[in-house]
Structure formats: structure tokens, C-alpha cells
Length: 109
Image (tube, rainbow, N blue to C red):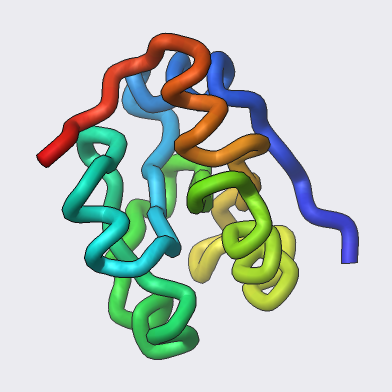
């Protein structure tokens, strides 16, 4: 399955504009150490229950992220091209590593 991707700069712009929500599929300890502000945690190890428990707005894009993009790609491939309400689904290219490298804000413990 082809997975739509988004780069960190575009994702940051969507998030600032309120046009997207961010789902972090890393584990809880990774999320606690460093996260993107506003991200929802839904660990890959807890799928699909973690995904099903999310209450995602129907009017925003869904961006799925992890450390580098591998785990988030798995989730996007599993979920499909859209979210539960038909929202467009995107894998964040390069994950939090590329986000940090771009100098974008991160909340650290």
C-alpha cells in the first residue's frame, strides 16, 4: 500500500494553522523524554486498541509520527489512506529526528 508522506516543515505549518492533528506512535518512555507539543500518544505496541481509542476531529489531516518514520509508516499502512472519518492520513518523513534537525520546537523532559 502506498502511504502519503509529509515533510516536517509542511507538517509544522499545518499544525500551527490548526489544520492537522499529530499522533505519536513511539513508546511512552520515548514520548516522555521528548515530544512535539500537542501530539497524542498511541504506541505501536498497543495497536489497534490505541488507535481506536483516539477521538480525532473529522475536519483535520492526521499526521502519524515516530522517531524516524518506520513505525509510523507501519501504522499508516495498517490504517489505510484515511482516518476513521475520512481524514487524509500522512506519515511524517524523518519523524522527530528530522523535526529536531529542522530546529522545530520539541518539549523535552
